[in-house]
Amino acid sequence: MPYPKVTVVGAGQVGATAAFLLVSKGLADVVLLDVAEGLPQGKSLDMMHSRSVELFSPTVVGTNDYADTQGSDIVVVTAGLPRKPGMSRDDLLAANAGIVRSVVAGAVAASPGALILCVTNPLDVMTYLAWKESGLPTQRVFGMGGVLDSARFAYAIAEETNKPMGSIQAVVCGAHGDAMVPMPRHSTVEGKSLVDVVDQSRVEALCERTIRGGAEVVALLKTGSAYYAPAASVVRMVQAVLGDTKESLSSCVYLSGEYGIRDVYVSVPAQLGREGVVSVTEMDLNAEEIDALRESAATIAASIEALGLRG
Ligand code: APR
Image (cartoon, rainbow, N blue to C red):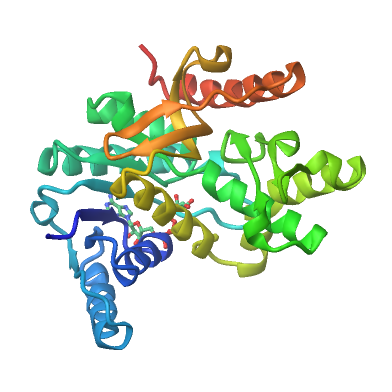
């Protein structure tokens, strides 16, 4: 059986790390594409040099030409400018919109049957833009935000409780940015709700730490932004799709009335499978949680309006 084909556009920190994880875990043949000449080719060659050490079977090829991406099952879009210290995700909006438009046009022309997984920030708006530009059904275009935010929440919870990672289920919904909505009541430690395990003041501190997670990394790195956890989160989603697992992962998906939210891409738990977004898993949210999610979605809607993407 041939491996599925995954194209990763953007051979920077996130894209290259995701590509390496995809091949080294034996999940897919990867095409790594970038506008920078030599960059995707060099990184791919470097990865292939590790093949006899890591003993993985799939291949990774670097290119600057969308013709090489033909017939991809999934196109992961990481092309863009990364966030610099002091720069908000929204500062990136205009710059990355032009990049995402051109990437999606090139990728869909070469692989009309592909799913698109958007990673470029500001994530929720870029995913909406990718959907609009692609002309594809909403089920086939989605974004990586909630998995990463949930992973950061899980890390904070594990640090606080000293419980093994495997015993923690963390859920973060909403915009991928300062307006994200950690869901402590729906997050569990050894099957018990976080709010029953940790004091309210500590729960708030953990949520704060989660929201600041990306900025904390940016401040420490000085140049560039996080990439190991983002790349791992991409791979987690790709794995669910390729394996057709239909597991529920907090994903940036199109909502058409769920939670009273319409015509916005925002992270909520959704089942992922070979067709893309199989269904949105409706959580049993209380009034406060619904309000928070709607407020968060409203911040995304405002950016979508600002870019003139609706209609
Ligand atoms: N087509 C293809 N590649 C492009 C294009 C384009 N039009 N424009 C830029 N790129 C490439 C750059 O050449 C660079 O190699 O995208 C890559 C981005 O890599 P990095 O600058 O290392 O950024 P990275 O840290 O990987 O983040 C990528 O993911 O998490 C988000 O906020 C982050 O939007 C950013 C994206």
